[in-house]
Structures are given as structure tokens and as C-alpha cells.
Image (cartoon, rainbow, N blue to C red; front, side, top):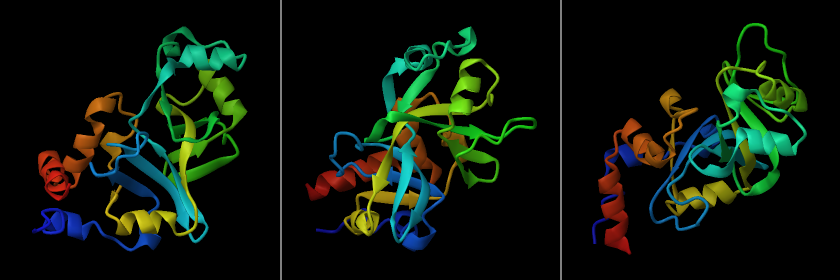
Amino acid sequence: MTDPLADNPTLRDCQVATSSLAPGMLISVPRLQDPFFSRTVIMLVEHGPEGAYGVVLNRRAPVDMATLLDGAGLAVDAELATESVWWGGPVHPETGVVLYLEEPGLDPYEPATDVLPGLRLSSSMDLLRDVANGRGPRTLALYLGRASWGPGQIEAELEQGSWIPADTEDSLLFSEQAGDLWEAALRSIGVDPAYVASGDAAQA
């Protein structure tokens, strides 16, 4: 049977060299049945011979900012109290990390990783404290845990067709539309979500 995924030129073009995956995005395909990663979009932060890691952009956690930071002993500014918290991944879910846009006058907040120019990921307690007090970056997302792969693992999953690698799409970052983000990510690379789903169904 013809594989409609393989015959799609957009998907073929997405099979980039694995050395160039980070920074970038990974979009899961419907055949990926892992309950955590099903229909997810991942911001891949680092990727190399020792493995890879990133954060899931569209898996909302069952707590808000006030509940989480209050549990860490931090009183939260009223304007941020009901902001969403996200599941970054199943690895170290007890650890919070913040993806944020740099702004003039912000502290450097170390330790941190420069994901893209002006985009950083940090686990700094000073950053969490400033976020709670309303003095942190204005554009941010707080994640619990991260998605992580060991050496060669992500390459194997790509060969299995579990992920579609893509360039970072700025409009998908910091989005509250968790339910629509997977389809939006596919459309951002010119792929019809219904086409991808029907292609997987044909191979089931």
C-alpha cells in the first residue's frame, strides 16, 4: 500500500540531518501512541551525541501559577495567579523551568540556556522569585520537567517516523491554545492535519 506520509513532499523535506535539529521543533505523528507525547509539539533546546532535551509546548498541567509557586514558598502577584503551568516532560517533573523572552534590564538568570537569539530557558530560583513578584519577564511559560532522549534515541524515533522535525515557529511559543497547537504546528509547515491522520490510519 502506498504510504501517503512518505509521498508527501513537505514531510520528505522535513527529514533534515539530525545534527541540525536543535534549536527547532518536533511535531508528533498520530501513530506515536505514548500517552504523554501523543499529539504534542516540542521545543527542542539541545541535541548532540550525548542526547537531546526540550520542553513540550502544549500539555497543560493541572495547577496554576499561584498553586505551584505558593507550594515553593513564593507569594504570587495577583495578575499572574491564574496563569497556566505546563508539563515540560516526564523527566524531573518536580523541577520548574521557565522559557522566556529577554528584555532590557532583566537579570541574566543563571543557569540558563540560550535557545534562540532573545529566547532563554532557565531553572534559576531568582527567576522564579521575580516571576512570582511580578518583576520577571513579561513573556514567559513555566514548565514542570522536560522531555529527554539518550544517545541515539531521538535518531531512532525519527527513523521510525514518530516525529516531524521543523524550524521554530514563533507564533507557537507561549500559546495558551494547547488544544489547537498540534494542528497549528502542522499547518505551519504546510501539512494538512487531516492528511497526516488519514495516512497513519491507512497503515494501522
